[in-house]
Length: 360
Image 1: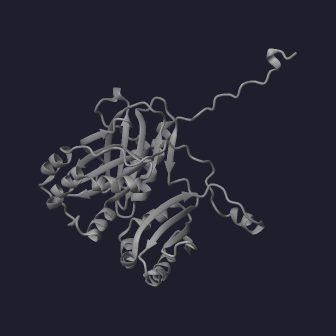
Image 2 (image 1 turned 90 degrees about the vertical axis):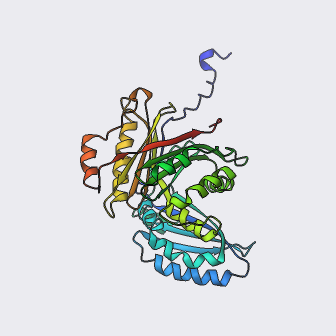
Image 3 (image 1 turned 90 degrees about the horizontal axis):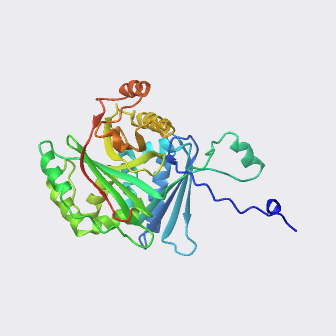
């Protein structure tokens, strides 16, 4: 007879960490995968453009290697993989004007592209590969996600038009949140500081599918057309190349996110104008400070996302409701180091609109 103490114990409930973290700053190697759909008959043109691009990329700091592969089932489908020493040098390059110029020859022969970026967590191989691993940096621990992709766009409007632009951007009907069976819009937060606009979005599923979905919505298209006359960078939404160039330059990627739980908070955004060439360093400094805050139960910060492109850094924070409208300061040590990297003092951005989808 089996006593109660001898019976196999029930499988314990799986403990799920509430801490969510994503970051480009862990120093591990980066694998970039670019899926390319080439126009029919343009394969040779694409190959020649790639060879030219490949020669230029080889001299970019942080680049290790790349491969070009063609589908055995559909010759119009190509795959480019590249390896980088870590994520920061890749992001510095891919978000630069130099990159915009480098890839221009590809535009006329490519129908569509999709870029995926991965940290290398584990690697297998023979003895030679194992020896190399001693010199290569792998991600020590997998990060815990929440299934949400965070991205932002930023652009400037003509000085003097700020009030009108704010009115236009705050007065629109929210687009349908459901994109398809696997993708939906979760939240859109829009801020302004001076003539700079920052639109942060949260998506569950496929970011590219969500961005295309939003762009097709008539209510969103109407808002974009309405602010066109006020933009400092001209764009024509009816011209595919003009629109593509605008949104390429407006992209403000998330380089760090940390959340200590799922409690709701009040959303703030802070704008940091970094000194030339110091944007990535500043973003890393802010990311480290917010990671430390997430470990402190007394911290007013519930979650933080740092966005960075070139010398523009934006820190989006959700603070505890009892914090009120007060801006969340950085620790004194971090604030002093951050000031040395700034062209001007950090500024609290004005909230224009913050909308959640009903089912987010």
